[in-house]
Amino acid sequence: MKTGTRTATRRAPFAPVLLLVAALLAVITVLAPGARATGGLDAAAAALKQGPVYVDPRAAGQFPKADADALAKKIKNSGKPIFVAVLPRAAEYPPKTLLQDLRTKVGISGVYAVELGNGFNAGADPRVMPHGAVTNLVGSVNRSDYPTVSQRLNSFVDIADQQAMGHAPSSWGGGGNSGIDTGTLVGLGALVVIGGGGAYALARRQRRRRAEEERAALEDLRVVVDEDITAFGEELDRLDFNPGEPGADDAMRADYSHALDAYENAKSAMTRAERPGDVQSVTRALEDGRFSLATLAARREGRPLPERRLPCFFDPRHGPSVVDVAWAPSGGAERTVPVCAADKSRLDDGREPLARTVRTESGDRPYWDAGPAYAPWAGGYFGGGLLPGLLVGTMLGNLMMSSPAYGADFGGPSGAEGGDVTGSDFNPDDFGGGFGDGGGFDGGGGGGFDGGF
Image (cartoon, rainbow, N blue to C red; front, side, top):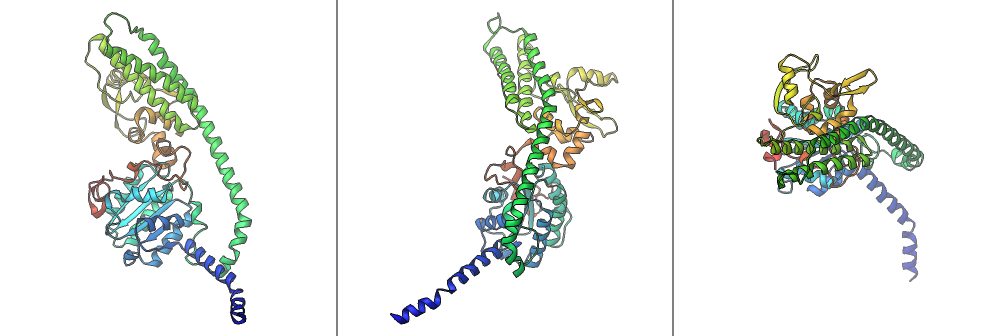
């Protein structure tokens, strides 16, 4: 008994030491920038929650640890939510759904780049980088025929770093050394205590500043949107339709009811709007209502029903367009835009179209030259995916394509930024097909991984 007691007594002092060693090993594992695990999608997701780069052990020959650590350091130093995975061709990495499955399991908004076997692809939450920007970047990287995985991934990250919005996830910890020395571990606790308060205060200031900017932008939009809602209400009044009038049928009454619902939906959505992106649902409802009015007018006059088209580019209040025409803004390149019959006639006569103008500090300007606040307003009318193409060469178009922040209001969870935890709340289309030339794995042109979904 005495011997057993002495043995237990001798071992007891080592228990805290063993616990400390285990804790330090856990810290080292978490902070190691080029994380490596045993393989599989769950392991990849777990590693990417803790660091920006994951290399499946079976793909280590393609992307050595030194290269992975250097890339992880570069991403951490950039402070951007860019995730990179290097994976082998294996059954646990199904190509067709790999990007969206990885994004789901990691659950953090960001840019996701994956090297699968000898193919490369990427996707992103639109608040971090617009779909068009990702498509162009992936295509450019694939067409460059880089001889090594390292060159391809570094090329992608270098450009994505310049365009991505948001912040690195807090779960990554600090920035970018490839090793963790004793001094770092000793000072870790002190840094947490000292820096935690400052980081929290900085984050609060950033959130407050962003909220103030969004409130100001929403107030600018409110004037324009209220004018649109009022104009649509006046159209309903001028229509002078009575559901019980002679000749009215169920189809006419359905069109009229749909237009009334759209009017009420637009008013309610504007009342609930808390940020600029919320305005998109208002103008989408107005566009839908105007098409119902155009359909009702055609039924009452015995004309063929109108084709469902985008509203007039120059002023959505003109109603659905009737034709596409070539047009160029002042000093800009020519592009094809949808126009109403009246604006088509004006252009044919060599006159300027009746453009929707909004108030700016420099006077009234067409909405496409009035600044970024009008991106969500226009997006509801024309669709976020089509808008940059329609606006290329204009102030709003240039801002949307040069800074993903302006395109971010077209999708993504309300209020979520790059680096925020959103779980599975994202659009899978942003992590799938549609990449075009060389965008798929193995250089295929069919879209996403192995040809898309």
